[in-house]
Length: 338
Image: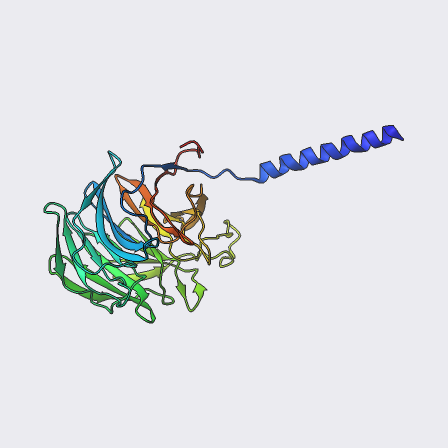
């Protein structure tokens, strides 16, 4: 009897080891490595804005949850030295939920919420003089939770919330200091969406409308002034068996950036913040999951790129507000010791 029991134990042990090896084999090691840099030197915050001009990035405004106040300070980031310098504060209402974009020589901020009013004032920042100049008001209604991007030194602002959820889009010409309404994004209205630019075409996705997390992805061509719907990003939105349709990237208040001709979505989430990272190939119109952001899961972070290198910083998770700064190398192997 003892021999039979021992034999059974050996067989069970073999099955457990085999199952363990099979589980390990099923786990896919995601590509990409996040590196923790020096902290942002302003107060921790969420819902701020960021833009780049030349080799510097500028981060400002937002909400300080610890002091329960909105902010109007701005900081310049030197990526080469990993160093922050405070610059002149925005000479206007402190705000969160604004948007910003940069051109080759100037930075711009518009819209937002100051705790009482939904804003539409527009301000231009000149890095050479460290001065702000008020420009023509945003052409649409005052709002927050919009998206913004720049293409060929023109700014684009759209969607958001003005008391109602919106889908309109506007183009800003810095030379003429004028706003012109362009064709609205396709699909549903949305707020708290994400956007990135690849090869002079913009991509907008995520966000919510009527309590629904949206699954569509839209590409904007400024030469045609038209939007083209691309493959949906929802977990169960696709049925083509020729690719992995198990996407889990819908949500709100994430960040987006583009490097090396590819787009990236990070953080944000549906109902709770996560740290997922997805890479978009515009040629294949396909997404691939990459190594998750190694900081705390968060909403309302900001992102920018300098010299084709991305940076993700600030944000909030529940009542905790962040001041950490991370960069990402999509071609490196994940390393917990960075």
